[in-house]
Image (cartoon, rainbow, N blue to C red; front, side):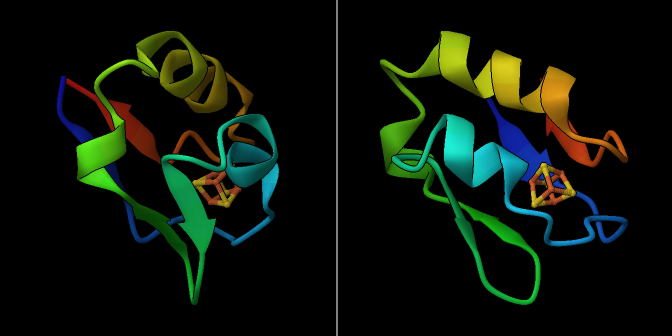
Length: 58
Ligand code: SF4
C-alpha cells in the first residue's frame, strides 16, 4: 500500500488522531512509510476521515 498526502492538506490533525504511527503533522501531514504495513485499516479510516480528501491510498 502506498500512502501520499496532497498539498491540499490543511494540517487539521485528524489523521494523526486516528493513526499517529503513520501520520504526523508538520506544515502538512507527513507519512511514515515504514509504519504503513500493519496499520492499513487505520490508514484507510484516516483517509476517509480527512476533511479535504488529501490522503491518497494506492
Ligand atoms: S486529516 Fe487530511 S487535512 Fe487533516 S492533517 Fe490529515 S491529511 Fe491533512
